[in-house]
Image (cartoon, rainbow, N blue to C red; front, top):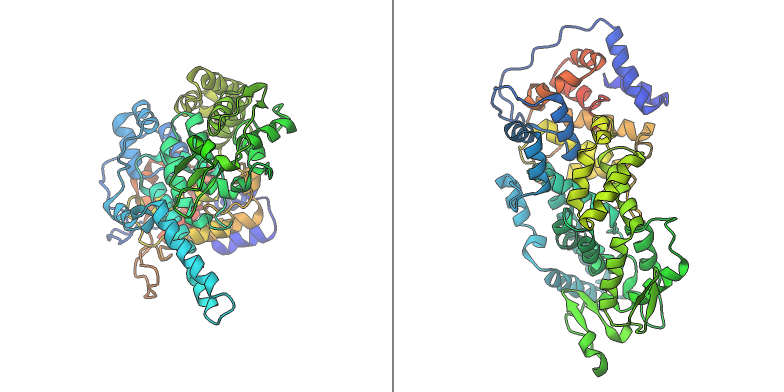
Length: 534
């Protein structure tokens, strides 16, 4: 099976055609009688009821789209409540994410879950200062290594927490939106000390606002140290204007390119944002007496009026009176309410949840809801999910790498909590979409063309094989080198698979029939055209 697949890839057959040809070739040969699935219980097999899963194929397609990949537990919840009630619950998530105890325990044990951002910053700062004091001595390398290791550990914890929620949270739409907005308001962990900040950025600036008003989400990102450091606004001060953040807010976060703003608007917004910065010392800055009333500070965020350029500004046709940080609030209000923002952000949401080239009628409907609801993300999504365009797009959206990898694990292992997330992070690195890893502020692309090249597809087939074998190290603690005794998961025996089987093409069914063992059948299913899409 794998040999034929790899030969096709080496001949540079277009990826979408490659799988079709692979499965088509299987259909043209005399398929052996499928091996009966083993009856013995498997360590990795999710223990499920044998009762049928009463979820229709269209409902499963919706579940695949709004979740990180359909699996039995979520399909059961959908079948029990009905699609309308299930969608409403996803749009109004409970405070309890319903994580399995083993996943909750892993998250609770993390340093980023137990300590404040200020406490973490203090520890990082002390390690950095200790290394700097040893510069030029034999001990410098070891001290610098400890500092960098601390930053790497903090980033790894943030990645692990995010992925555990993607895999197991009952609030799947919330987790999908957390990734979407993290990508929209992208920061890269590779810059400076953002590795120490990114976990808090996701937890406090992004995640609480993913289904609220866009204005509140934008405001939360504007004051977070991760964003202020990533786009250099901590350097933006009176007499030393830095336009970087102002430009990206307008180009990538709100209005979009070609929406009519001018270079003067960028300059005016940069003036408004002067003084918005970071305080790593834990001590308030010394403020001139006349400016004390303008000072603001919370956690590591600091608005320092000494660095702010007071005076009136003309921004997007409005006069903003020089009044310190209140100017920023007014600029955020203007940006969130602008029609181009509604159009631009609605287009990105539609591209993520619907199709690579969203039709104009869909975008117009979403922007109308944006205006009526004052930028309520939840209501904009209701319009999207209720649209005929959304329904027509089901099963057609190509999975980007993280959707592919996470959905593969959910299909294979369901709610059986993995102990070691590192193999999944390695896969995302190999496929070019590591969490917090996109270096430029535009975020990862969401279109098929960005992820479907022959090299990318060959990597996916290898990952499908590893998931299918069940020997990827997920159920061993990090550092454990003992052989993994577990047999492959039994994807084709899960109630999830039984529910999606009616939607598989004859070519896929024929190819699955040629699998000589569970690992073969797992790999063929995960490498099928149907599983590559959502």
